[in-house]
Length: 164
Image 1 (cartoon, rainbow, N blue to C red):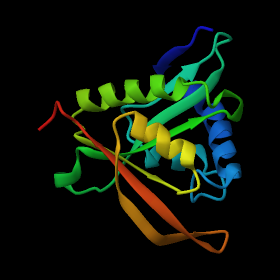
Image 2 (cartoon, rainbow, N blue to C red):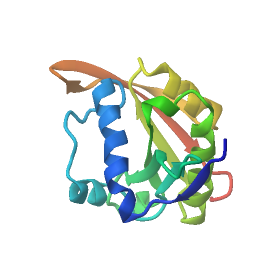
Image 3 (spheres, rainbow, N blue to C red):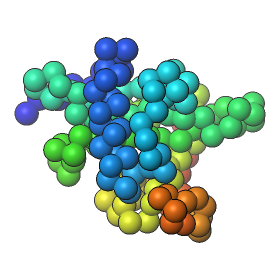
């Protein structure tokens, strides 16, 4: 199969939101419980470093983007990774293609640290990040509630070797 990584465009918004809804529905991908509107989603993410992965039918099957961790100038090079795939496209090694592209692009845009906060039960996502150069920083216990239940987060990070 042939896949193409390309920059996320406004025409992708509907499909990106459909895939994000699948993540919400899974109950192990995000604290979000309802889909934000496109304007809210767009303002939550950095305008650079937004990518989609298309299959041979030019259908978007995955996306990634970065969120700032802080508005403070000293943290301008630190961002949180969001990477989501259509439920029918997981487990095929495609995430590595997309994440590697995001890592290179993030470094080209001056990001020195990428982080991810993942529910402990999302073992596949934790393994995926570790396989792609992230390290476990620790577990934040009962950091937030999802559907009335306290949830932990495993914090992972990747420090660039190219930006000092």
